[in-house]
Image 1 (cartoon, rainbow, N blue to C red):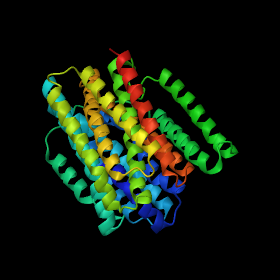
Image 2 (cartoon, one colour):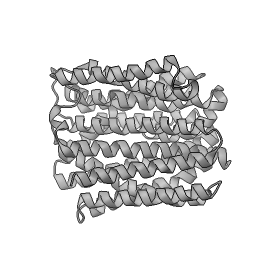
Image 3 (cartoon, rainbow, N blue to C red):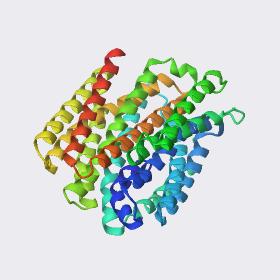
Length: 431
């Protein structure tokens, strides 16, 4: 559900723009508002799991998500939409870390847990893949509002099922949580996104925009001071000393800058440049997401036979080679045919499909049961910040190049090569 409301909603943007009569610069907030609240509150949610228990937080977050989805579906202007998308992101931030914790304690044996985490990642990949198809189909047949209404039956099933389970994590209701640092993090991210998005529209030298840039720098400095002197930091300091924990979070950041950015660019390219409907655009993205699942399954099968570091190297090389091929096609051909994009986007996704569960396994190995909720929240936070940066940066590239899709594709695939080059460097440094 959390993934569907990113990939599915991406395809709804052109339809929402028409109905609500908004510009692309404004409509990017339909995506960013959701990712912003999700990324800004995940770490707080990870600590709330330790205070109130995973089951309670899961149910509360899912109910909030359902209510916000109803509100988003009946939005009549951009501001109403943005408010309910913020609430949706808040709900998702509450149920995502708690779901990983419930899974973690259900499979205590290490090798079994690694396999289950691979399957869990596969299920998320299924959601990522079908998000484009489901979203495109719903938008084409029932209108854009249906992309939010689909959350109601799914959410009610989840709440009912988890509510009937006897499983629960240990928690400490007396645990002290420093809410201030989480709010500072949220407003720091907000300032950064406003600076990046509005900079394109009003100029980065605009006085008001400069103030948002300065505010971001100040808030990051304040957050550093708070964390340094806090008895209850957002992330326990012991985790920050573990190399695997830091590596997993960097990988999560890279994966989602890439995947969210690619989904935005390709969804819009298929509709605005090649003239396909939202449903057909979803179908064209689907093969890549399907191959992503095969990558997950490949990891699940091979992790018993091949070192995880070797699998990471294989995945990074596959994505880099695929991105280079798409870059060459973007330079030589205008437009790039949909068949070419489908094939090499799919091979990129196979590499991503290997890297994603590897990242989750490294993370959970570094955290242990005690910090599983915090570690899961930290990884998901970095993923969502990556998604936020991916949609923001690629959104700026799209709006800066207007309808020049050749330049947009070139910039997009250059970015992919750089990102996975960074992945290889990080992996080599940590061997």
